[in-house]
Amino acid sequence: MTVRLGTRASKLALTQSQQTADQLAAVGGFPVELVHIRTEGDVLKGSLSQMGGTGVFVAALRDALLQDKCDIAVHSLKDLPTGPAAGLTLAATPKRVDVRDVLCARDGLKLADLPRGATVGTGSPRRAAQLRAARPDLDIRDIRGNVDTRLGRVPGLPGNTSDAVVEGKSCDLDAVVLAAAGLQRIGRLDVISEYLETDIMLPAAGQGSLAIECRTADAPRKAGSTEGSQGVLAQALAALEDPDTRLAVTAERALLARLEAGCAAPVGAYAYRKGSMLYLEAVVCAVDGTTTLRDKRASDGLTEVGATLLGIELAEILLARGAADIADLAAS
Image (cartoon, rainbow, N blue to C red; front, side):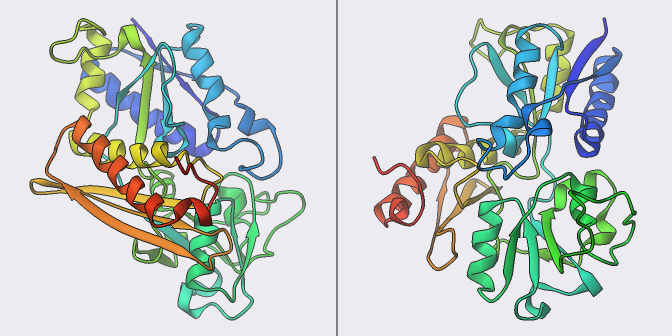
């Protein structure tokens, strides 16, 4: 049997999909081939929030799964909508890598060293709001494009090439903010001038994590359930699962779901297990960065139900403190 892995065709997507394919082939003993799927997010122009959020990168891959054009799909988990998808299951969450955002700036400058009025590019309202909160004197610019294109907006970064241009723009920004995980996966850590710690910038829910999705009938069968499969693919998917990553992203996504916050909402969330406790920290920001609400809670419920309840609890606390008044969130 050959397993068909659906993936976007961007450099980052292909890299993380190939890495997943290699891992699946190694543990499952079967060949895995990549199937390129063009998504709406790869075609449309304009800001991500105006296009409908990160879900634009997911819908075509999910359709391909349901239409049996592929057997599994690999997403960046932060791109995955929090609502369920009929007929599909999040089959595996491999071990998470670095959750932090990073600054890639000219001359190796750090955030505190950027001059007043320096231009910083990001396509994320979450990053933009937290940047404005930390440095209200910066000029935050909305940008689109793949990793190489974004890096091409900053002069002097290692590895920049002349074809890294979007809409005729290159070398026109002082810095861009990207996810450490993506740069790690494509071998571009050399462009990082500063890792932004979570006390400055909380990541997106699921950042640093991959999501392997499949048809529910092919997913690993859970204990006590009759749904799913015990076949070779299901066993291989189960081998890639990291329980601590699953707990963390479940808490983060439960918080996001309760807030009804998507890509357009400036919300950061980071959960992690330490010993017998699961910790979750979140921030809700006004888009202009003038107001931020941050809180943290912990739970000893180290199950998916416990993680979900932790996310809901922290969301309720933030809502009670007025989160819906400073951002476009659910209030009830």
